[in-house]
Image (tube, rainbow, N blue to C red; front, side):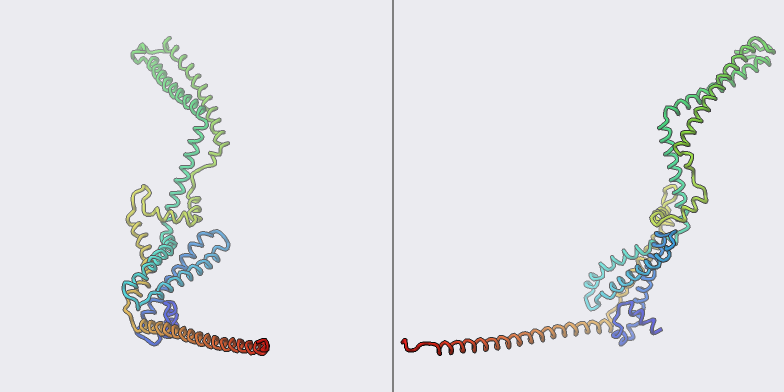
Length: 374
């Protein structure tokens, strides 16, 4: 247990030899260190999971995920440790808040980053379902776009085919009406166009001949329509329209399983809305609160350090810093004084040396001087 506590003290950035002297402060820094450690652990899991999806399908995906997760977790751990350790409790409250503000903003950003991959895993099932709907709608839209482009490309042929089909429908309707009139004539049903006399008379024969002629026209028209449809089908096959089909359930499951990080992140954002575009408040609140939970968890060490009263450990570290600063200044003064004394000694020595040189030179000049000239 003692080793675990010392490990958490290290995580909190505390000076362990000083902290050991004050037992009342140890629990506080154990809690701070544990929070920082688990934040780094969650960051490692989050980063590893995100990297696993980036390289999903690769044989080395798991190795990449472990390596990146470890590096990412270590980076976040080191950053959190520095953020907490750098808050100076000996400063005033306003100054502490000023020191903590950029660190809190950084903690919020880190919390948002590490929470996203974990949210992707929590809502994995819902994300896959939303991706399936998206892929299916995308494929349907693609097929519709291809069909519209094809119809525009062969606009003349489609216009002729539609006109032939309209003529066919009109002929079939007319033949049906004429055949009904023929039956009325044969069976003696009195109408404005029939005689009301039962039997197969001249009118019935003439009507039947007209029907046969129109049926021949209809058969010819149907043959032309079939030729046009065969031509259109061949062009569709040539342009690859028959290869584009709606995804099956098995294909959608496979696409959702291999979806990348970007697609899954987009689908997570879309979970806040229903398929019809209306807002899904329940899911939106769940996603938001999970993100806020990790943001708060990331900011918690900073808040704990800010809210905690200044204890013996803080006074001891502040005194140690003050002593170190004072000693550093005295060391500086010592070296300045030594430098000054050395400089003075060097000046005195050099001055004496130059004086002797000048005196020697003057003596030599005197010896060489010709006094008889005077």
